[in-house]
Length: 302
Image (cartoon, rainbow, N blue to C red; front, side, top):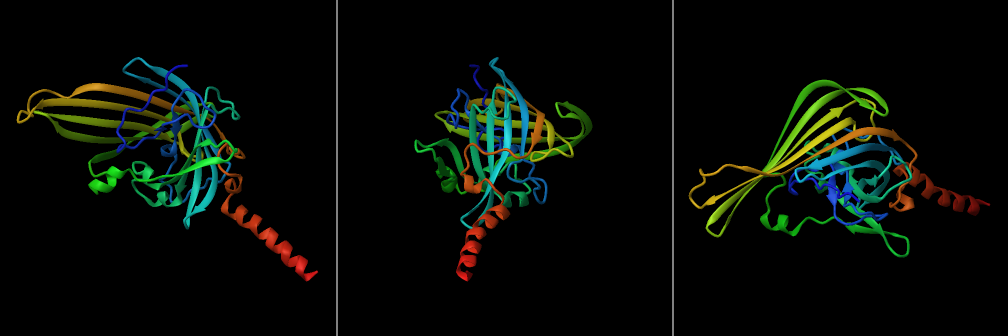
């Protein structure tokens, strides 16, 4: 099987198709992709509901000559009130074909609804992750893992994004052909970069990582809000003897490009991972829990 291309970015950069290590439910040879960054967080209030889904055809290549193509389905898999916080489950499925029932890899992430109030939601999406499900236990129940902050972030006490530069620019209007038809889109370019400089022995090294996203936003597309997205990641590096920083130039050491194009969307899909009691909206969960109580009350009256 062809090797999946991992986006060449540091953890501090925003990842639209964030890579989660491990095989995920369903096995497969690729790393599992977590597409929480594909969701449109710019809206004041989301309109999606459990069961809504959107699918993209993804192609990728890098400077080493690796290339890959696959499908990514983003499913709103349910809702859960976790530690008093309203959250929603996002399930990401990878497959070789556009078949809705096929999934070579899957991962589910519980996200806080409060992310929709953050103006830097995409670049800080990891801060709103609460739990993940990447595999199933031997007894058939999902293995739920709490999302914890890395120990390093607690030690350095730097605010998220302190060394990250984020720029956005509207490029105008363009059309995008998809399997769902022709869309008139607003093009938005998002650039995010991080630079790290450190000393080792008698030399200093600087690494600059940059991600450039061109997103084609269109009305009527649920969950993500875009018909197409192009992501270019680059890593430049430079080293020099201490005290001679003006010598040498930044050299490109790695780059990759990923393109995602809309295939289809719909509603009524069921999760492969999320517990069944959460695969419904809060309103449906409340209605289901109130029915037994009403039945008991009616029985007492009789």
